[in-house]
Image (cartoon, rainbow, N blue to C red):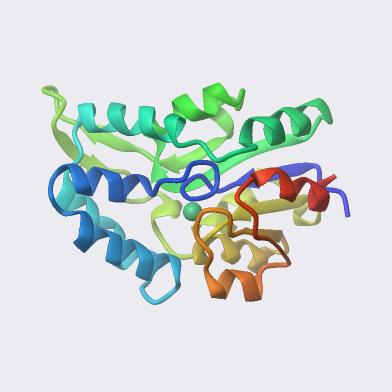
Length: 213
Ligand SMILES: [Mg+2]
């Protein structure tokens, strides 16, 4: 099977971190937030039930988002740069589809030569002094089913698309006919290993290429 449009999740797929959990640690809420994230990624809690709750407690400011952007890059998963370069050489269209915060992901996307228009994530808004104001509440990616909706917006031909990710929210793309490659290189989730069309269980992302090219 060969795909023309390749979509990647970000957290625990391109980078070893869960961005919101890192922000939570910096304000002393690490454990509490990590439990909520785990529950959402395992499908025990709906994403919308935890999304606003996490951000209202953490209230990441501009400095936190900048620190998070650096961390996404520092914790990049082995093989990611090679995978992106290979796909780009082969003329594949690459998108990043993430329930994470867009401004923190853009520098990683730039490093991987993915244009901003192909980065789909949740916007965060700041007050004049850089303090947290709000997030993009109507963003589909902050809700259950969001990744499927974004896939539909990207292309009317889901059979040409594949999505690579580690979590339950990534599996949702299957509902609109997109094939999903589960990635267990950072976190292995049984539900994803069982339900994904393909599963890569190695610490490097390079293993996904055999299912894409
Ligand atoms: Mg993820």
